[in-house]
Image (cartoon, rainbow, N blue to C red; front, side, top):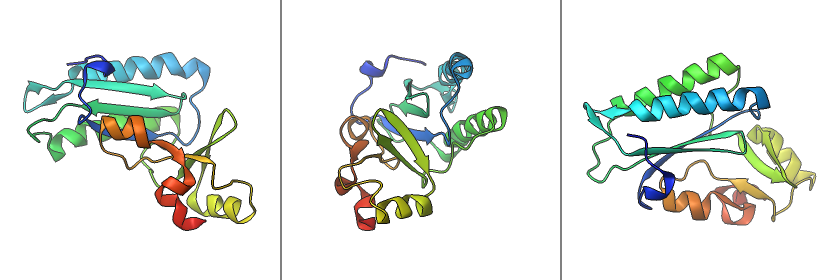
Length: 160
């Protein structure tokens, strides 16, 4: 059951799917409709889940679900992955590679492979104050507090 983002608790589970490119303006509304369609019908053992989503920077698909009893199974997550794979195929982009780096450069969100990002660090094209997105967070609280952080506060700090 699709619910408002605000109605989910801070412990709601989070899955982030970062796109290898920004969705084009003409794609955004169609993608959002598909996300709404999927999250509205996503079930766990024929029981409705309280689910919400965020579609941020026209690049990040974030799905959230309440799972107070830990009942979301691998089978349930496979439904999400199949949905995301369908989007990848339809829009010709990558959404499942969380090891690629997304970071802010001014008002723009950039996407780089980790190897390229290391070169940017070495060449001082990005600094320790650069904001990166940590796609490995797991809860709504972490999304709100630790998703967009300076490199020095992320696991990327090891690359400095």
